Image: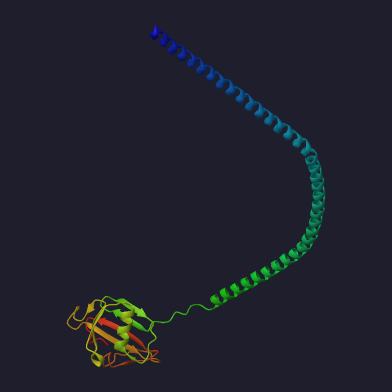
Length: 254
């Protein structure tokens, strides 16, 4: 019996505790739901207040914004009128200035045209004068005064005008042949200078007596002379004519 009573007490206590626990949970749930409802109400009231405040502020702000718009529009109209007036004045001033400048530019253009035409006329006259002077003065062809001839083949090797003075005929011959790029072979020096070959024509090529001889026509003379001295001893003077000849018999040819 005692055991049963103990079991009953335990079971009854457990039932009581479970009921109390369930009741406590329900109370907590109810409190939570009430708190949530109150919070939602507070939030809704706050949002309503905000909306009302915004609507009031918008209603209050409409009138001054309209007035400001009207004032800005009126100011814009006044500014546009003043700007139009200024632009008209400026356009009138520019037109008057353009007229004056047009006259000055036209006068300047006419002046420049006249000056350019005068310059062109001067240039044409000068060019004509230069062409006429060139035509009047023909190019002077200077007569050659240094000649090299191949008498065996009747051929002229070199014909040139020179302007040297107070120089030996040998030195003159060397300079002219070097300038004309004509190959030669000379032996000796000074008074003993002897030209053994000019332009490929060497002594004794066309016989045992073949070789080069030089002749000089003095200024004022009518004939060539065969000097009795070597080319390294005879002085060349301005106005003289020197002629070299290749003979098959240089000793007997005069």
